[in-house]
Length: 88
Image 1 (cartoon, rainbow, N blue to C red):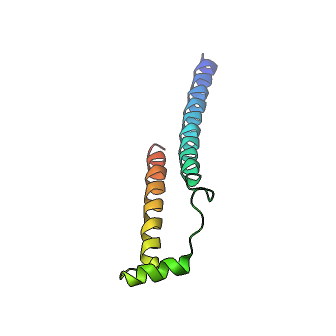
Image 2: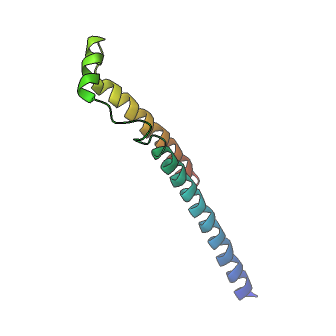
Image 3: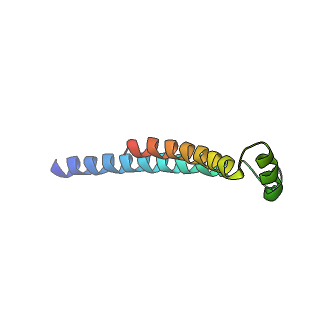
């Protein structure tokens, strides 16, 4: 009887760990899909020098635009990661 209960506890623990692993994998797959969403074949590398000149003429900086874009990327990834980690 004790062995049966122990086996059941082990089985439940394994199921919980498998569920956790699945959540991690799903989060990583979402991040990977987002990373592939902007291929160079569709969005070629810009001329950053020219972009900086155009932005400067409008009173903006390429650095501020880049920082804004990176904050957005990190916030979305962070939200996804935190959601998975909170379940842990």
